[in-house]
Length: 271
Ligand SMILES: [Zn+2]
Image 1 (cartoon, protein in one colour):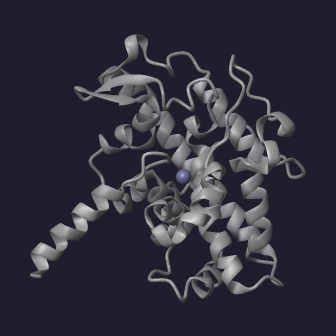
Image 2 (cartoon, protein in one colour; image 1 turned 90 degrees about the vertical axis):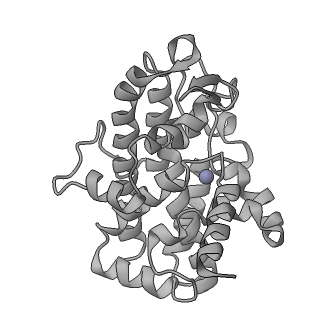
């Protein structure tokens, strides 16, 4: 195959496997790259060591693996076991308080998954293979929990069943937040991350309580965003006015995701 034809084949394969149930690849890569830029030297060295057997040494290079396994028949068991870990469904009616027995039955939600994988990642007595897999999940799931509709309401499956018109086509609100709005910038992930990165720390609405459960807090923040006025578009129509109002919010969540991911990794990998 010529290199051009091979490039086209790879591009088509990428388009075919583009997942529809998470920040799209763009959002996950941006969050990962934002974190990469703020790793401590010790954490960065440990990331590189753990990722040595992979095809990449960067967080962006592994940020989408947890979604991509759904298209790999050899990983089907792992996908079935972990697919419920990418989100949490709250009860609805503006109730965004995390109540584990109600909102995370059997530990099957993004909050419990993060608690588990961050624990494995930070545990030096675990084999590298387990810590490497935990790193891949942590990088992905910190991104997901910051996508507001990954912590939305059970009734509409986090916006997945809320149909909308976007760019002249039928879509759903979840998809538009995963990738549609971000794509309107027309930026590749490297340029997007550069643009969102800021030398001044982002002012977060609420500080992370050191003794609290930061993952639950991030999920609750996401949920409260979905409860905000105008989040569900009038007439199920997403036009330029909606994107102007909501894209800055999506980008704030990417920034916060990147910053939180760096904090988690710096803590877990610098012990
Ligand atoms: Zn996901």
